[in-house]
Image 1: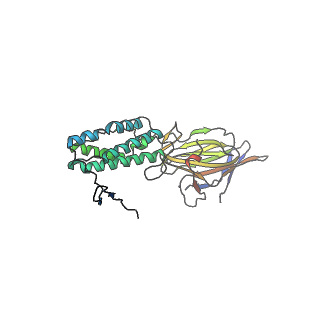
Image 2 (image 1 turned 90 degrees about the horizontal axis):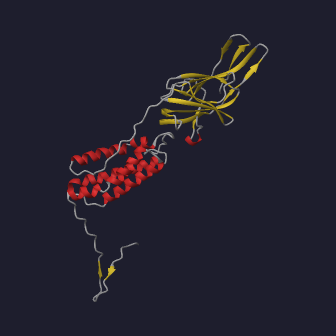
Image 3 (image 1 turned 45 degrees about the horizontal axis):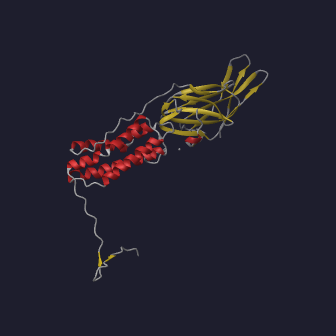
Length: 320
């Protein structure tokens, strides 16, 4: 049960002591034999497909080189400007290249590398398809503000492909695929107390926020479904919002690292949550004083904390 604190202020006199609340946050067919219609009757077994002739190393290099341009072009486009369409286009190019590899008769010296290359192209294609759906290779949701190009560049499957390509080149049967340089994960941040939204703080209420979690955080308060204000806190930061107007507020918070100001979200390690209990701010005037509500929110578990939180689907999270 949440306990509301009040602070009294004598009219024209210094404010008296206040009480606060600590809230803890804490996601039978058979084969038909052909019949001989010639004289004498009888049946003959179907002829077997001829075994492909093993390529020479030169022939193999030339055949595998045919996958270079479509794969390199699609990956370069993705690295330059990531999007869902380019993720899917690159995945299609990778799958087509793997299919070509599956159809060649690699020389003995390159046979295992050929099998491995096909498998790694398919693995990367699968990861890119997952990213296009907003998930990583393990089915976990990726940050809504994350750049597809950055996410693609961080996949284990891309790193494994790069390692194999180097090994094949060193062994004398290069695949010819040129992997582009993908953009690196950034670590952008704002200062504690930076307001991302600030519509009206003309009241008396005060809200202190303590961020003791593993990442930065943005706290957004809504009243009657409308966003009132959103404030940024760095890891281990603390800030007091003053001037909160009377009303009942729902508290949302997102945590993570690398704040993208354009997409208004964290691009790495993000989580989206809200407090299950609302905060009610009130002001009471008497002939001699003003009483107003104060709260303290802790974005980490604390002994004796009274608040519970719930995960919020990213699509339902209010943009700061």
